[in-house]
Amino acid sequence: MKAKKIDAFTLNEMLMVLAIIGILLLIALPQFMPLIAKTKGQEAKIQLKHIANLQSQYRYINSKFSPDFNNIDFEVPRTVKEGGTANYRYEVIEASTTSFKARAEAVEDFDGDGIYNVWEIDENGTLKEITKD
Image (cartoon, rainbow, N blue to C red; front, top):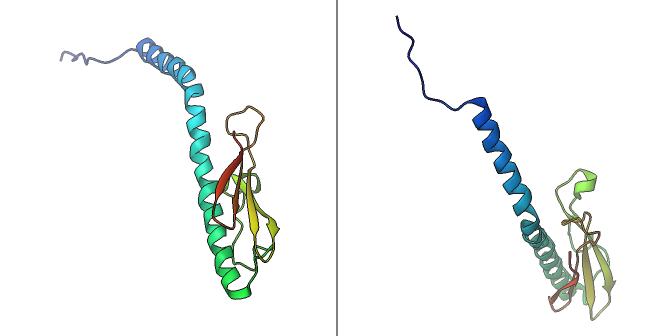
């Protein structure tokens, strides 16, 4: 019986392809870092808008804004440093009868430049990026 030869790639060819893919990734990754930071910033925007909506509901009932997340029934998500999935830490930095301001501060540096992303929202629902990462 004669053995049939199967066309296939050699180990050296496979390793060469993997090396080329690795080099291409190293070249492309720095260009994708701003997109990664922008995508993670969406989390802060969504949560801050939710906080603003809860604050508005609380104000309609109590005629004031609340400095405490428990009063508005906002469950603060656990951050990635605490074993959770949230990339931001949330806090109410100002609350009175006429205004409030909430802040989302990144718990990790998304692009490795030493600057942490910070977002704020006010009683009008105006989102503002305080510190860009």
